[in-house]
Image (cartoon, rainbow, N blue to C red; front, side, top):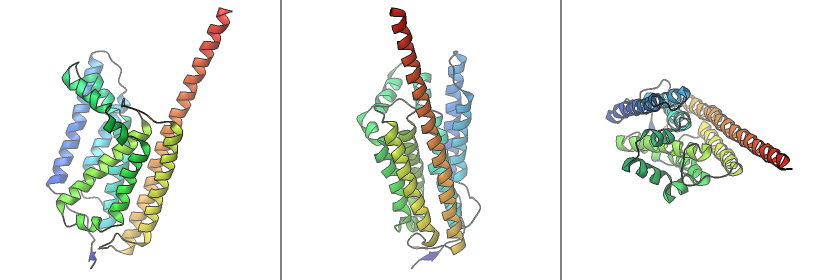
Length: 269
C-alpha cells in the first residue's frame, strides 16, 4: 500500500560527508589551477568558478531543500544530475589533472584510464544516454524510488548514480577532455534530442502519476513534474548551445585551413 510522503529527507551521515568531500574536491581543483598559473601556464579563471559552483551545488543538493517531499527531491535531481555535471565537465578537470600532475606513474595511469577501451565505450553518446535517462525511468517508474525513502544506503547509491550518470552523459556530449575516442557532432546532437524527449515524456507522466509505491499530494506531484520538465529544458538548451559553439568553431578552423592552403598554392605559382 502506498505510504504518504510529505517532508524532505533530513541530512544523514552520507549527505554531510558528501558535502565535505565535494568542497574538498573543489579545493584540490583550485590548487591544481594555481599550480599551473604559478609556472606560467594559462588556465581560464571561469573554469575555476564553474567547477567550484558545480561542487557547491552537489553539496547543497544533499541538504534539505524547500518544497514538498517530491518537489524537494526533484530539486536535488536537477542540481545533482543535470546542472552540476555541466559545470563540472565544462571546467575540464581531466585536462587540468593531466597538465598539473608531474611526469610519472600517476600521470601515466590517469592518461591510460582516460584512453582505455572501457571509457571509450562508456562515453559513446547512445550508451551514456541509456545509462543516464534509462536510470531515471527505472527510478521513477518502478518501486525503486519508494524503497529508497526507507533505505538510507539505497538513497545514497541513487545520488551517486545520478551524479555519475549526469557527468558521463555530459562528457559524452561535450567531448572536452582527452579520452580514447570521440564521436561526430550529428550523432551527439541526435542523442541530445532523443534524451531530451525521453526526459520530457517522463516529466509529463509524473505530472499525473506518482512513482509506484508513493502517495505524494497532487500539488507536490505537479510542482515536481513542472520543475523536472522546465529545468531539464534549460539544461538541454545549454548543452545544445555548447554543441553549436563547437560546430561554429570547427567550421572556423576548416575555413582558416582552406584559406591557408589556397594562399600557399597561390604563392607556389
